[in-house]
Image (tube, rainbow, N blue to C red; front, side):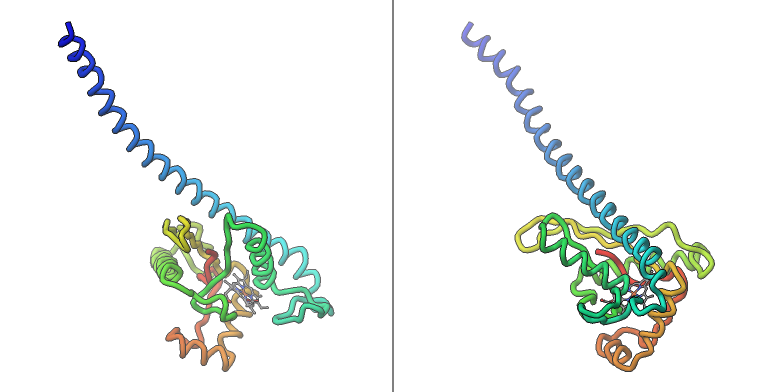
Length: 220
Ligand code: HEC
């Protein structure tokens, strides 16, 4: 009898033990995937919020004040009557967000950055920008991106990694030249002497000309 019960126990226990181990592995994998999926979704939501805020600010504030004494102006001192440029506005909100919580942070960056603080500061941002440039090139070849045609197929570039001891998801998505004003202002900036010099030093093409719908920067 003793033998039988031991056998029975074993028969029952072995499959459970195996099942248990298997299911734990599967659960852990699924959790990691779910967490990454949720983080990716959140990053996409943040990116949408940022460009929508900027678009609304351009349409409802910047365009209304254009030409007035309050018009958006580059480098306007905090106490001047001028409202900030759209990018400066975005970065101002980004700074405040970072001060208030540590769940997420974002910034506008570019290979052709105007502000030295908005450079592609590390390997992830550089790879992300290369990836987006390759998408731009392919879309142009396929006739899906031109000054007449806005590209709708931009894919984000993301990577889960450890930063300062914390597991984070880093994510970049295209910030394209969606309006003629983006193009004309940034093309003029590329012709400034100090900007040309900065491009030479960074090993980046000098006098880059953007066209409508081109990649300008990314939001990461
Ligand atoms: C009137 C000029 C002007 C217009 C219009 C303009 N920008 Fe900018 N942009 C700037 C300046 C100046 C900066 C740097 C400002 C800062 O960091 O405070 C900048 C910053 C940026 C950056 C961050 C990287 C960098 O260059 O420092 C991106 C990306 C960008 N602009 C994209 C755009 C897009 C897309 C549009 C159109 C929706 C646009 N800009 C419209 C002047 C302009």
